[in-house]
Image 1: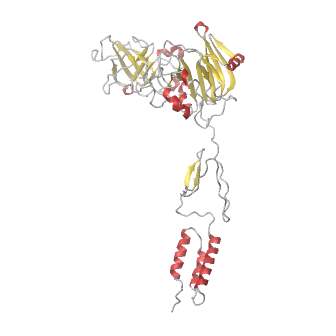
Image 2: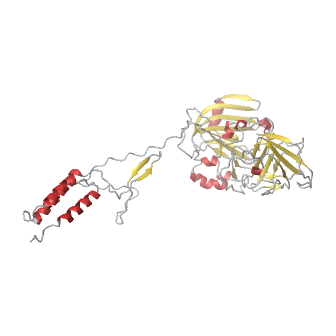
Image 3: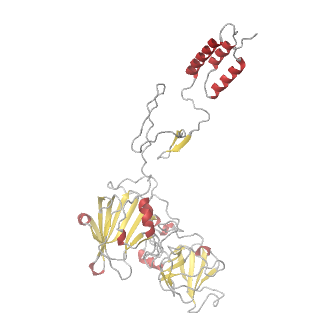
Length: 494
């Protein structure tokens, strides 16, 4: 008759092995010893003695054979990214409902238990690396220029007080004759027509090195200054329409070597400044222009890049380079010159990317023209859009189009056909006709003019466009059909 306290040998052995192995413990040797003991006759050893021996052997086996860094299969490893983009594996955070709160100011470190293995302190995340400039289109080696940050922002201070300007006009706003292709800078709108506010303070928006100050003497002996500074070796900025320089900059300009031609003198220097240092005051013109060039970014995809200088290809909206806390307030001021219409489309700070290759949309040059020939800049034409409301087409016409006054023109867009089509739908081959030009202002507060007759447009190829005015007051596209262009047309190229 079996002993009433004899252990159920097969059941206990299987459960013990399965449980221990599922937790990652290597106990094959100890398990063999246990089974040997359990198979012994119960008459030789009492159940209590067998239990004590089993527990002792189990403890010895676990201690000798268990891996020190074992991880249970149901625990998940989570990869997290550090500031430099590398990955660090961590265990998921566990929450305990009764855990004591930790102060925001102090960190309580629990005392290690007697059996806890000391853990080496985690290595701190590496500091953000400076911006890579290896592939930049240009890099200034002036030693006084601060290093480029790992990313934006560059500007930590707005150059003008909020109460001293109506708006910050977006990059690419249109004006004739100087900005037919869109202004390659943003501009603080200081004076509206009939106003002349002067001596409004201007400060530097970032730590930088001033490398050039240009002075132009205008009619009446008034001098305007253009101050160029570099917040980092691949990022150049210029503030212009400065009436007077600060005392320190005046001294630096006076002591610098200069080259002069006519009414313009350029001083080359290397003068370090700090954010919020005084730059000067405005000169009383309509705006204070703020231009930025980021040589480390991708250039604009113009139809023919060879017609543009490097600064136009890499011009960027200064708004994009302000700290986010500044952008949140300044963004409401990005818009029309009078501050009445905010730009809400992206990119918020504006763009110069007008060209759509293979269509009429974008910039067109008079024969052999380029952005590097400012004397002929007012001879060009652009088929673009309002810088506040991109749904509104605008034709910016210089002095070259025969029979048409220099100015801005717009019309009601038609979705089909060859009359008043949006420029991106004008392709080589057919003749297109434009009529019903609206006089007044666009949504972006651009002044547009009426036009007598119609405007015919044809692209014989992707890089050539003919523009011709035909008819007189009362003429529309239907009255002169079928359309035919003559040698009176003006030819533009890309």
